[in-house]
Image 1: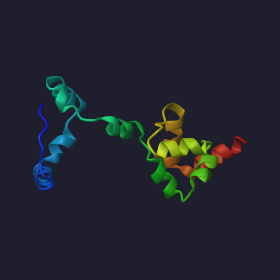
Image 2: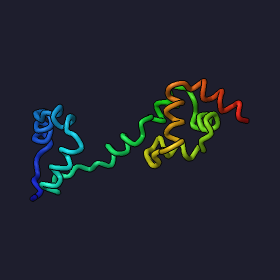
Image 3: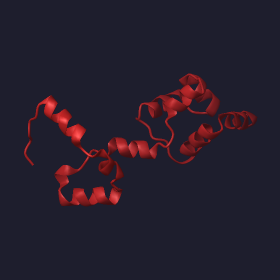
Image 4: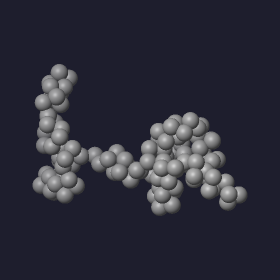
Length: 119
């Protein structure tokens, strides 16, 4: 597919006229079919997969709890580096870490108390 140059105004007009509800409603199977039909239309799925994999927004959760990265790490037994990397999208928690984050999001005081008992 050739590269087509457009002006900023043309690009903005195209974005405004696009029916985003159809794009947002596309299933993974539909996207895979489109990609199989024309690999040049393949979207960059990196951010979408990262957001799907990380069900809890660590930065928002930490801010909601009014904690610094160090305080959050200490309270919930993460390293400060892990908290920073999760917030910046360089690390996607899985397994026990993902489950712990979901529990923290639902009931942070319970999790903090339960972890404190283990010391």
